[in-house]
Image (cartoon, rainbow, N blue to C red):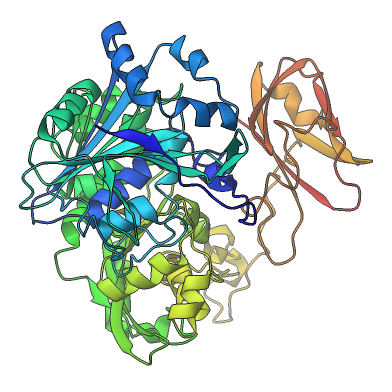
Length: 609
């Protein structure tokens, strides 16, 4: 019978707090999204066949009878929760939701139960803050599984795994609190729900494998797995705000690429999200405009990955860039023609990497680019295998096209994986693993980040030239007196068209610690109400201040010392640095103060329809 137990610790041991939880629930990545990213990343790493990885999310509300069974399971954890500052009785008074997450066509938590062998079982249950993953694997930090306990009001979760050849699933639980004491006895942050301990000297916690006990638990938790290999995660006392719609939305937003490529299927409640059902689910969730994702573009490039590229550039080494020297003139001309015709351009960029052991790797990235038509929004995608790096889109912020950088080859995915932050949203050129494993990593990472921008500059941006005589004949008037004289015709000066000056509609005036927005003469011709979008950022040298804005500079949403006054207008805060002003009449005005007077504030105001 499973039971809860924490190891005892000495007074001289360091007190440990679990401060990393905020990395998985913040303004950029919510808890549902972090949960989805961690689960599917790990499931993709554990794929054991050519069949698509299948992941299932299901939420059930416990009945009164089931609550009694959960109370019996949590009885041994209750004093530790109270020492942490959580009254278990308060949880018992609330509705209890249980989340079950299961993956299939995966290998499960492989490795020995009895040894510290650094295999999957050992790494999942007994290691925090370190990871043995490498190569194409998604995880690097060993912190991601913290999202499971963070999703539970009781800071605990259970894992049930089946490996190929197992006669019974193996079930364990874990609570992640902080260093605490009960009646003077000191305990560490991590405790386990388990069956027995291995022999001395290791005395490792061993999973429950009794068939009847495991079967009772799977029924209680809503687990479907029997003896299919893979891993099931059970999160009891699921936190508010995590629901099936949020989860499905996070799947669409973060894993559209492998789903449309036919490499992943996700079941959320009674919804199946696959390549065949994807569009229907997007429409059902009203996500067609989510982050302006052009799903037809994603579906098209998913199919193109297995086909030869339109062109292959010269190999990038060191500080090389993608430029005219990367292609022969005929190829470059063909790429420009293909782009201007509205077709998807597929360029493969070979790269050379070298690790600290002196081994050299020939690898590549794939770039895709399609021109946008009037009314379409630019789209930028950076993907490492199935993982979409949402924060890296700013690296191609100047590209006004639909574009994607896909890294699928083994060594480049290993390199980029070592550069990722714990939430897998950004790359860090100074990451410890990156510097420890690779030579000259900053130059290589810079090449990946700038690849889309450089390709667009090569094939997408049209160079405009001013021809001062282009319309000379059109505006010239023949001098009839010179006709037939044999003398060179004189051309009359070009007439200057009488174009009335454009009336300024918005006026921005600097004030101490802020600015004032007032209507100009052009605003008299507007139809009201009229929306005005205003962006603000502190100026930066050599960079776009709006794309590099940080909420740590200021935040309209939370900073109390920013004073805002509006007349004949209503104001809505869209982002930390963006306002939407609805002007009600030509006499509107807006003033904001409270910004840092030691820094230059840049303001951009644009009127909508």
